[in-house]
Image (cartoon, rainbow, N blue to C red; front, side):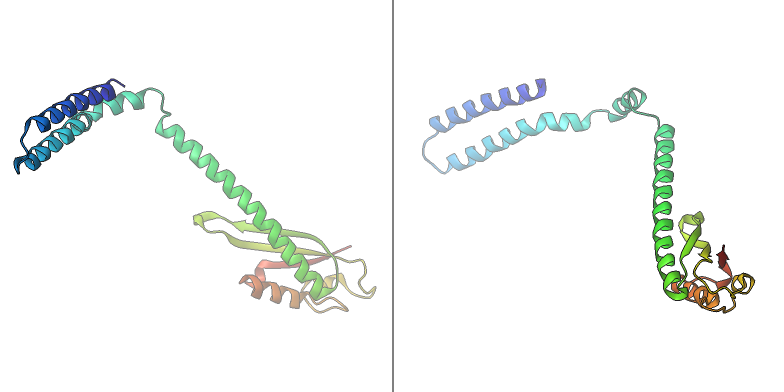
Length: 187
């Protein structure tokens, strides 16, 4: 505030001085030069306090400021890591939910059986999210009575449920090795 008061006071004095000089000068070519010099003085008057701030020793101010109320860097980094982990867990849960919905729709359309449970395991190491294992458990209700659960669990075609076709379709859809997809039929 004091700086602003100082600038305004100096500008006021210089403006009055400039007005007085203009009134005293005769109407000649010298008047333009005097106006230029007065404008430069006004500019220097405005810039001088600003340049004084720039020339100050900022290192002492920064040390005093950082030692006081700012949180330490370690605390800020820990908090940032905690927030990153929360965001990663939330996005992983959303991804699992969306994948489960998609897999359920595909499984029901291919097999005609209702999906009992879907387990999605993701690998989030290395900054990339990859599907690690997909387990689909189909309900046995509504399937043909003579259908063998053992046959279907091995991925062979049964009467009404083709688990091998489902595994291949899911593998192509998500770019997985078919060995990472496990399809079971529960009771």
